[in-house]
Length: 198
Image (cartoon, rainbow, N blue to C red):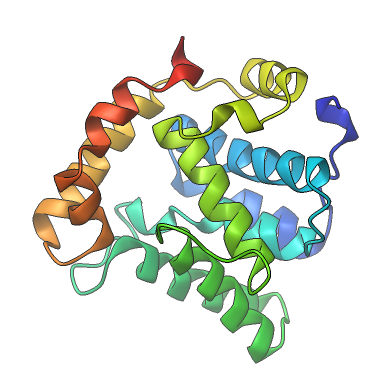
């Protein structure tokens, strides 16, 4: 498998989500979002997991939008804030209320420890791929050629440093959030030791 074998969906919603992510994310977070989709799509293809490419792509582009200063909520965890932003974005894209709920659900669930693939393939894939990219968990599940090509095309830049700061800040301000639990469980050390940075 190579990177160009993966389907990058090209719909108005996908193009709009990429535009929003490009405007509000740092270059490191933008590349992380793109890699999250690519890792998910590669893993799905390698493991015969059927998924909605448009839904997963939009969720991947917007899953960290709650970390952007313009959308950071002091009332809810960043993944919930991101789910709200995605819901509103997808309303503008003309998605049905049920599909809007799904994109928000996938974004919220990306912070879960595990999302059952048979119940929610897109949530499962985004949870898995973001964990791969941020903490380095199970990076051997990404086909080697896809991994190399994606890292060359969408380099990691300062993602380890930036995300460590973001997750620590979210955890400190929102002590009952998943972010706070991840910080207590040593996520920052895992980010620093991510094998994708070797």
